[in-house]
Length: 81
Image 1 (cartoon, rainbow, N blue to C red):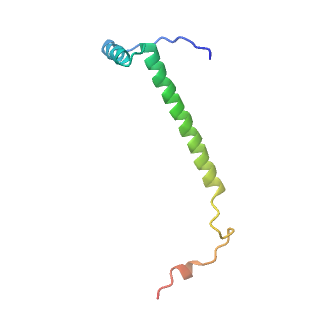
Image 2 (image 1 turned 45 degrees about the vertical axis):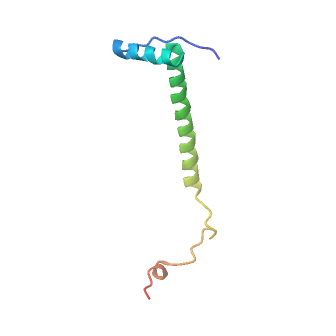
């Protein structure tokens, strides 16, 4: 996979804390940020696939065993005994 460098501008205190986090995880700052970005992108792709699947299910509908025919009418449903 081809990689490309990016320039990132952060407040100094945030950068210092991020460097400490990277050291605590035995990673470079670049590896730490890369890991987080890859995770965000992967989660977004999973969400998009799940959303598309759900929309497709709603559009297709579900087989409720009635072959699309109602075996009742409104009056029968609201009939009081």
